Amino acid sequence: MKRYDIASQIKDDSEKRKLSTIIISASPDTTDTVIRTSNPQRLDKLALDFYADESLWWMIATVNQLGKGTLIVPRNTIIRIPDKERVLSEIEQKNKTR
Image (cartoon, rainbow, N blue to C red; front, side, top):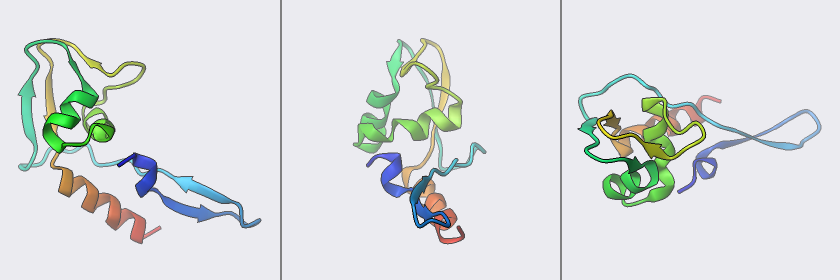
């Protein structure tokens, strides 16, 4: 699932469609998994391991402020893996109020 697949579509005054992305909460939650990378890791590989979907790498990147220019997470980095269902629910709720 790509992040633009779940973005709400908004139309401007001329009826031109625009996608509006959603920034997810970066606040820690008890449902998060916290790991320390023992070797350099790729965000898409972590998403595949934890979510069974490599396209959700942006969830991990967003809450950890990573992924700006690279998908590589350096060795010995502590990162949070947010609960997939919690994040998707948050996005769904935000889409309903837009």
